[in-house]
Image 1 (cartoon, helix red, strand yellow):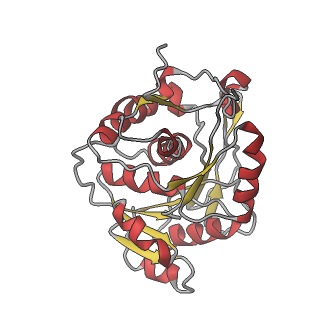
Image 2 (cartoon, rainbow, N blue to C red):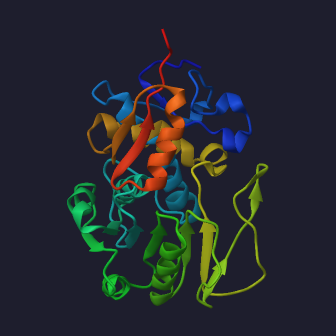
Length: 283
């Protein structure tokens, strides 16, 4: 495989269990279906915010919700989708992919990030801190609309589950293992594939399915999702200026020894930023 500098790659060692596929090293190998060309105008540090966020969002939208694949000229589906956590890295990609799939996006974000989320394509943005945010969002949704939790905390999962239940039930992709204390109309659905545990099942029949989502879902490799997203849409959309590498990177220079520093930054919390470790060979 040709690994030119103009290509960005999605390391997937968690799925393959091969350290050669891992990040945080000078050289890595990756399957061709998870590689996309990037334009010269996009700095590599900015491109680095995309791989995991795009794959995670794509898994939620196209594997779990079975939405139409993204297009540079999408046709309206007449549906709305809630992206909870629109200024996060996964949320930023999910908004843009959903718009490119013909959906109207309703998102949550802190007040300071509303302009960013709108610039990504959200038509309405709600402050997730508002006590009445569930009521506000439910008022603009209809049965058959969608909700995706792009934050992955017990609190956001509970709120998204409540919102899905309020509009008649459905499938809720989440970024965190399904938590206890969910409403009675919520059913957690899990399964196992390709030796990678991304779900398990519970024999109950309720209204709402909760599916754990991750950017390493086998569907990105073995189904046509990876082909539609990474081979086709992302290179074309980046070149046409119709997909933004957001949020902006917060670059941590200094090489591999700075990985822990980056993790500490994440632990302290960041908003509308993506921690990117600058890995370089010592001379």
